[in-house]
Amino acid sequence: MTTALRTEKPEASSLFLPEPATVEETGLDYGFILDLCLKTIYYAGRPSARAISDRLCLAFSVIEGVLEFLRRQEYVEIVGATGITEQDYQYALTSKGETKTQEVLERSQYVGPAPVPFDLYEQVVARQGIAHIEATPERLAEAFDLLQDGGAYLFEIRPDFPERGRKHRPPQERQGKKARV
Image (cartoon, rainbow, N blue to C red; front, side, top):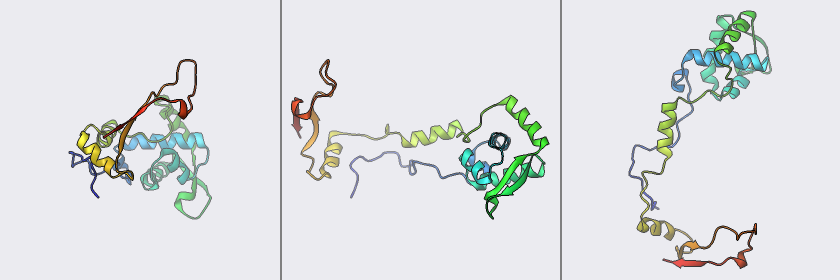
């Protein structure tokens, strides 16, 4: 079966980008993700790596190296685990980490999902747009032919707004016509 509304934009092969698996693939600065991790731990108390990953909306593979770096720099420490995998390790700020986090919070108080770089956002939105689709009467008729009733009625003309003073008009009271193609 072919689609009646063809695209003239072959480079738009994927409407969505795959989830980033590395810091580089996020398009964000490494330091920015470090700061987000510190602030997330600061406000969450003793979150697991999985909880940090969920709050930042990033794959564990992205934040795994970030957490290891923060641990080596003695900004965070592992204070427990809720399971046996690294994703279950619980992290807490050290005193050095709390000082660093206060500095980071003075620059930006944002804590939450890692943002998408604006240029990447624009690319994805352009791929998902419909400006490149040409909807001619012939293509619409072809698309409606795929419907069960053979496309007998392409559209229905009727008033869509209720009369003044009435909130709802039952279907039997609506006045309208159906247009045959």
